[in-house]
Image: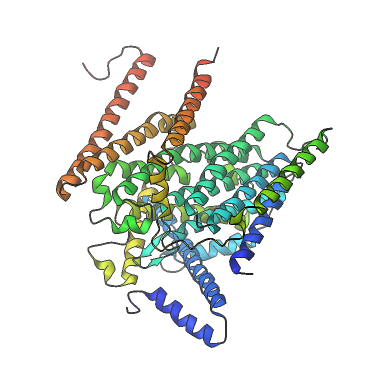
Length: 396
Length: 170
């Protein structure tokens, strides 16, 4: 086992040797190394987060036919640091009548709910935060619950009606979209026969997106809603609510929400890659070196992040009742039916050859999605006729 | 004292302290938030017992759903978040008596139980708690009946809620 295959273990053993050599008891050294590992991971994520601000601004600019930040450094790369300095030296305001403690805890919880997600992300075959955690898929939902809590805390403690309305909307979105998301997390679980994210990746000799394309799309929609990004960003709704739940936050506290949102989007790009696109696997390249595996998963996460941005800057904001109706009347039933069909097909096709299994899964998945779309289309045509009278649409 | 015991004592103190704050805090939202931290303490206790699945379900169900529901209910039903009236009513001595009796009863019951002084046997390597749990929930000689009864109850509650919400509008 060389350094290039399992760098973390080698580094930990090396540190362990030094620390015990200094006369430190083994258990204390272990705890110290554990904390050091967490610190390094979080520090790398925060540095990545700084550049995500730049990536996001550059990509928006491209989608909107602008150039984006281009003054500071090559391609505006130093711009985020200027932004950070600005955020830090801004006045730290607290609105009158705000609930001080809750107001200050909320941004921290928001950032934390994103960072703890990385505890279960397998970065390479042997670089995993918590090893053998066989409930990784559920853990994603649990971290989302803490994010929901932070938003309602922020909205309520600001003592501002716009903030409170924004928080209500966001919580309504998150609580309802959690259901299709959790259901879709169960589909890779069925394929991999484990909830652990590493086991899910290792089971993907064929990417799960080929087995369940509709499930991947539903997961993407639910993830975008969970992130509170356009078209599901009525929590911010700057044309009606100023800035939603973070209206009253200034300086670095606002920065925490903003950076948390960007990192959250990137993280869900990563989860898309892990659950449906093979995670760190890419034609056996991940076995060559752990660093190559990390590069592959970061690249795939960036593609997922780019798709989320693409959706955000292309679509318009949906009205809240439409969005809740879309979730409860279309997405949730579809997700449940899809889960049942997948479980049934899995039981039927389990012992057949790989090709029959994959094509059976793919066809049943697409069929369910197609039927659902047809039902929705017939329903909306009927509704439209009720409103417009029996007027034909371009039939003559 | 091992590290695990220290963590357990800290968690227990945190949970009990949060629970105490839930009932004494005058601001209802603060009470709900203290409840969240008490529930989180319980989740940590599950994690200490190597019951990772229960710990995560505790966070998903209790913090993600029930506590949020509490906060919503408080926000939608109260105009003023501060509770003005006295925090005890005239029956406080009866409640105190009952809780002391229950505590003493449980204390002596657990004192007499042989499991109290035994150390837990180590979990064998490769033991998959979550699939054992799944098997137990659907095997006929374990918990399939309570499991199905609970799900029928939940479906009944769901249909009832939909009925009340959808057909009671006059």
